[in-house]
Length: 113
Image 1 (tube, rainbow, N blue to C red):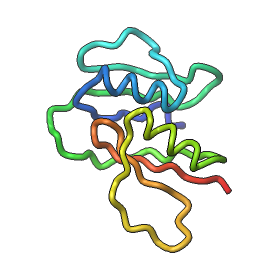
Image 2 (cartoon, helix red, strand yellow; image 1 turned 135 degrees about the vertical axis):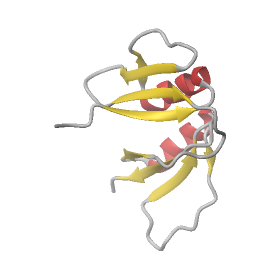
Image 3 (cartoon, one colour; image 1 turned 120 degrees about the horizontal axis):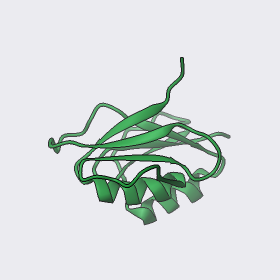
Image 4 (tube, one colour; image 1 turned 90 degrees about the vertical axis):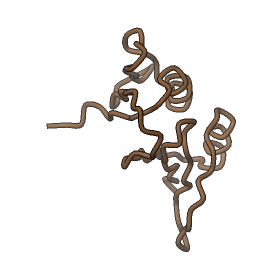
């Protein structure tokens, strides 16, 4: 058994496709519909990200941890793509930064160092 996909609830599928495609270097597997899209890595293998339209504006209880060797560069890049910083209490020595995608979904950028 293995994780084949993460299903991410969003209110705006086209906006989520644009953000997550650039953020993860993914591309559409098939043309997106108004309420569903599947993203896969542009190169190589990896976990599929499925984007499902939801009606609730409330944050969902899920998040993705993105691992990187250059946290500062990746956080800046994601902010330029439309992510925002989430107000968060960080413990001493935290190796992650909490951001939100344009739909308000939280995700972490974690330093591998």
